[in-house]
Image (tube, rainbow, N blue to C red; front, top):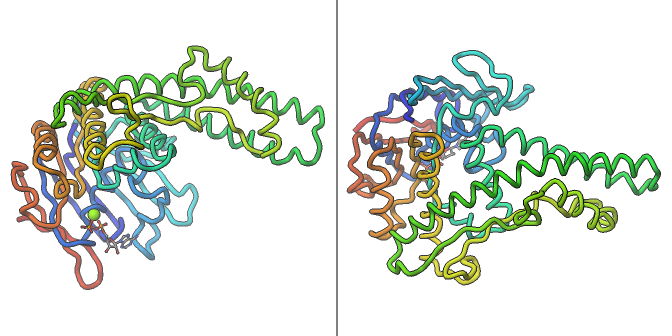
Length: 373
Ligand SMILES: Nc1ncnc2c1ncn2[C@@H]1O[C@H](COP(=O)(O)OP(=O)(O)OP(=O)(O)O)[C@@H](O)[C@H]1O
Ligand SMILES: [Mg+2]
C-alpha cells in the first residue's frame, strides 16, 4: 500500500500542508524541532487512529485552533482509498473519522485503509519498560492486522472498568444483589477475554517466527536464538473462557479487598529471550537494539503475509544510531516499500536510494513548511 496524497490542516506546527508522495524513499530532513516527526505522526494517525507518541489526541491540534484535520489517499491492491481524521479540543466526539468524505460510524472503521510500520528511537521501550509498553505494542499492531480485535479489546476494557467500579462500591456492604452483579460481570469479562487471548497468542507466535529469522540475519552471532513468548495468566490455556472464570473466582477475595481486578489479559506480558535467557535482564544494549529492530522488521513480514501487501515504512530518526550492519538490514527492508525517513542532516540518509528530499523548516512564528530539494 502507498500514500498517494496527504493534507494536514492545523496539525501540530503545520497550518497547512499538501503532499503527493512518491512510491520510493522520501527523506525528510531539517533541524531539531522543525516538524519531521509531526509529519510521520500524521500518517500514523491516519493508519491507526492514534499518535505513536501520545495518548492525548488534543496535543496534535495546533495550539489555539478549534480543529485539526489530516486527510490522505492511499493506493492498495484493491484500489484507491480515502480517509480523514478530525480532532476537536472541546466538541464531542473529540475524534471523527471520514471515509470517502462521509462520516464513519466508528473510529475503528478507519483501519485497513492505510497501514504503516513505524520505527522510532522510543521503540527500545518495548523491551526496556514494563508490561504496559509491550501490551500497547501488541494492541497497536493487532489493530492494523485484525480490525475486529479493536472491538474485542474495547468490549473487554469496558467490562473491566465496570467490574472495577462495582468492586469500589462494595464497601457499602456485600448484599446478594452485589454478588449477582459481580457474577454477571465475571461472565462478561471471561467471554470478552477469550478472543483477546487467542488473538494475542496467534500474533506473538507468528511474530516470533519472523523476528527470530530477522535477528539471525542481523546479529553478528547467528548462534544467538531470539524468541518472543506470550506470557500472562491465560497465555498457556486452550480454554480461556473457563480458566478466566476460575481465575476470577480464585482472586475474588483479593479483588474485593483491593477493589481491583487482578486476573485477566490486562496483566499480560511478552517475554523476549536470547539463548532462552530473558533479554530485559541479561541483554546488552546492542542485543536489545537488534531485538527491537528484528521485531519491527518481522512485523513487515507478518503484515505482508496477512494482508497480501506491504505497509508504508515510517523511519523516525533511527538511522543515526544504528551501526552499519543494522543500518543495512533496515535499508534492505526499504527497497520495495514506500518509506518516509526523517533525519537532521541530509547525509544521514546516505545509501537510502532516496527518490525525493524534503526540507522541513519552521519560520519565526513557529509554523512548519516543507520545501523540495
Ligand atoms: N500542538 C502544537 N501546536 C503547535 N506547535 C506544536 C504543537 N505540538 C508540537 N509543536 C511544535 O512542533 C515542533 C516539534 O516538531 P517535531 O517533533 O516534529 O520536531 P522534529 O523535526 O522531529 O525534531 P527532532 O529532530 O528534534 O526530532 C516544536 O517546535 C513544537 O513546538
Ligand atoms: Mg523528531
